[in-house]
Image (tube, rainbow, N blue to C red; front, side, top):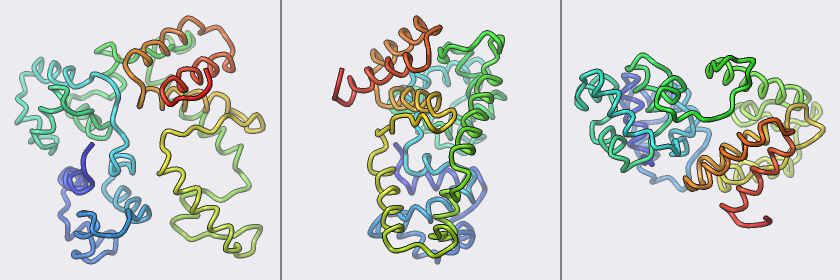
Amino acid sequence: MLPLNEAVDIAMAIKGYNKKKLAEKIEMSPSAFTDFLNGKTSKLDITKAQKIASVLDCTLDYLVGNDTINLDIGPCIKEERDSMNISSKELSEETKIPELIILKYEQGDEEVSEFLLGKICDYFSTTILEFMVKYDLYDEYIPEVFNGDVEAYESFKKAERADAMKEGSMKYPELKDIVEKGMYVVEGTPARRSYKFDLDFAVERIYGNPKGVWFWNENRPGDLEACLDEYILVIQQYGSKDLINELNRKLKENQDKSDEEKLDIAVRIYFKIFGGRE
């Protein structure tokens, strides 16, 4: 996992910014920005981190070191690079990713950041999904209707989740608006202090317990599928290789079963990782 200051330095290099320009963009003084990067502030200011991510066209997960891919993908980067007759130095110069990090990825000494892998794949003239398929790293079941088209299947899932979230939360403001615009308003009136405390608690829970998964809500359309996807994501991120393989094998064996039955499989493996019921 990259420390915040290093992650920002790389993203700035990719974007072509220096610290002074970025500080201006996020409306911070250069000294305050430097203190923020070096961890001299009392706590990570999520709002500032979101602004940095927005300006640098990266993700908040990347900045806080939570976008690593739990797959043996580093050697594949080297194989692709060698097939294109590109040195690690050349790849570093073209992507603005330090050569040492590329070498650590290739040697398996560090888990690969999804954001940085995206930049590497851009240089390889491919997408992350295409890259994973090429090196047999994408083994999720793809319904026959998609004819093996991973990109189409992933786009469908993303749109489906977005629709489900939209349908399930139409009467509420977007969380990003609550945070960025200070919309502590409920039913047209300024929210009581307790509402803000509830929001603060929710944000603390999100960042303090990234492994947690809320069980599905049957009153939210599409939430069962989204919940299953989330359990799979967390297992892939924190599970051992054996447990990830077990999950993939069981889901493949039960691909014709209902989503509830598949969810039960995922939940059982989740608790093998974090403890709890069998």
